[in-house]
Image (cartoon, rainbow, N blue to C red):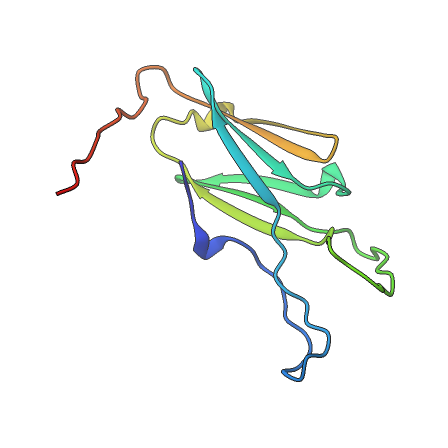
Length: 131
């Protein structure tokens, strides 16, 4: 499984070059670990609404996104180090992932996506010699 940086996040920039307010692209942090039978993806996205997440598989690409609800209250921030805004993350899946059986749950601010591995399709490890 590989992460596609070109599809990492989407957002809008507002403001000007004189240092006024600039809204940067939002991105949820992701950790991935491997078990004997799956890859487990943890998307750290506290304060979101479960129904506003979208997980799609198209071809060999897995896209995880979040769209805030319409009318979402946006306070006049004095200090803001965290955003609950929307994001899009895209990952390339290899042929060892059983895309028909991908499962997800959202608990305690973490979206966990289970990507089962098809038995016998695991990629072999190949060491590359550095000359």
